[in-house]
Each structure stands twice: as C-alpha cells, then as structure tokens.
Image (cartoon, rainbow, N blue to C red; front, side, top):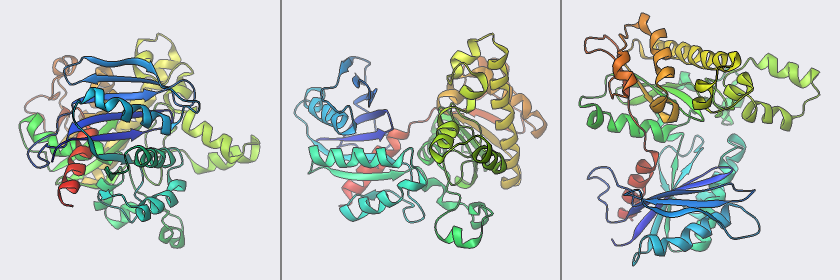
Length: 398
C-alpha cells in the first residue's frame, strides 16, 4: 500500500490533523506521524499551522481562504497542501475521532452512507461535538471521494462497563431509549493502557485509575486493562470540573436556575459548557497554567476545587475496582501541571500512595516511591496514533 492517511479531530472551532504513511504496519508498533497541525479559529478567522516530524514549520499560521470559515474550508485547505507536505504521495484513507457511538458502535468502523446517517441521529447525545465530527467527514468525502474513511469512537473503550455502571437512575424506559452512561475520552484511555508497559517498563497494574486531565477531564477505572467505570456519563458534561464545563452538578440546582433565572435551554447549556469549571470559579481563565501563575485568591480556590473533586473521584473509582494498585495522569494538565499532580497525590496518601515530589518536579514517568503500595505515573497520551492504527488495520482488511 502506497500513499498516506490523515487523522482528523474536528471540534467546534478547530480541526486538528496528523498525516501518517499508509505503509505503516498496523500491528508492528506505534504509527509515526509525518506531519501534525491544525486549522484554528473556525467561524472567525481560520489559520492553518503544520509541522513536520522533525519540528520544521510547514505552514506558519497561514490564513485559510474562503468566505464561510467552516469545517469544509478547513478540510479543503488541508487536502490542498498535502501534495506539498508529502510529495508524490496520495491520500488513501482518513481516520476520524467521533465523540459518540451510542449503544450500537463499540468498535471502529469503515464509514458508509448508511453508517454516517446513523451517526447523525446520535448528534443530540453530543451536541457540542458530533455535528462537527460529521461535518469533517462529509467535507473530506467531497475533496477525496476515493479515500477510505474510518470512524473511531470516544465511547468505545467503555463498552466493557458492567450493566450497573451504565444506569442513570431514571425509569428503565429512558435507558432503553439510549439515555444511559457511556463515558468518553476512550481513545486516550486506549492509548495509555496499551502503551503503559512500553513507557513505564512494567505491566499495567491490575487495578488502575487513569485521569485524563485537559480542557475536558475524566477518570476511568481500569481492571485488567478494561474499563469498568468512568466519571463522564451520558454526556461530556458529567464528572469532575473542567476548563469551562461544570462537571457533575445537583440536578435540583439546574431546575432552580430554569425556574428562577428566566433561563432557556440554550442559556443553561452555555452556562454549563462554556462559562463554568475553572473559568467560572476563578473568573480569570480556563487555562491551568495561567491560574497556577496567578496570585488571585479566586485562582487558588479554582485549583483547590479542581484537585479536591478529582481526588474524591479517585476514591469512588477505587471502590468500583475493589482496591487500587496505580494511578496514571495524562492529558495536557495531567502531563504538564506538576503542582496539580502533587495536590491530588497528597490527597490520595491514605490509599497507600507514597508520593515522590522530586520525581514529580522533574516530570518523571514514575512519581511515587519505589516501595509505595499504590504507584503513580505520568504517561503522555497520543489519541491520533490510536486512530491511525485502527484506520490502517481496517483498510488492510478490505
């Protein structure tokens, strides 16, 4: 197989992408990206950036042409530049991060018109994400109609959860209509659990909680490499506080806001998804790096709340696992914010975690002492390589 594949991660205001050689052996190790980049600023003034594997700038914040500043124009700009970035090659396939697979899609699939139509019906389950994922798929089909397209789902890793972990407490009829706990960030969890032994130099412990902490945040209880519980549920809004999302909140409070604040569904959705979390509590920023550097008491309170809520969920997931052998941090905050890791690990000392402050400060892979009963680790995630591997495998099987 000659040519290359693209991995596409489409959000509301950006399209992130990575280019991989199609000749990569899907079972022979981690695929290595040739190019990584993104089109940011969709809906306003989109600009394209791209870097080669050696760090060279291939496109340094170049304006994306077009009048609509939408996903279709972003994809068109990426496809147009591929010939320059990968001379003499052609686009054979593309793997897409798709937020929601519902109860039907629990593994990656080659996209067909029928499957794409089915995925569109799941948009109400992930209104902040699914429509953008689908827009990118349709745009790529228009510009590269012969390319095989594959959908990889953020819900698929959690398909192994037991039935009791999927219940919401609502009447059974709602559950049967698909209103259940799904869980997300599955591509990140799949990478971290699969790459742990190679990165850490020892097998993944039997009872592990992985914390994906970034712009979106969740934790997953992993037993023998499989998800059995996770903090996100029906939507990406549930669980721990995030950059701009509230995390779990008393539904009675939401009813109160609807009754007393003259809020409609749209304004409540905006409050919960875009104005809460770190941004809402601090009133300063959604960026953890900014908050850590800020002397303002509200910043410190936001960070404290963040660590407190995450530590509480570690305890909850330890119960689901029947004990705890290891904790793993990943995602932008999990990988880079040493003070946040230190705060959370200090709160977990009662579980048997003997924290190594020096290893944490120098960003070591293991951040607990060698004789700690519960070990702690930092494992950088790479969701794109998971999508690339699945895409190459499904293309080879055709």
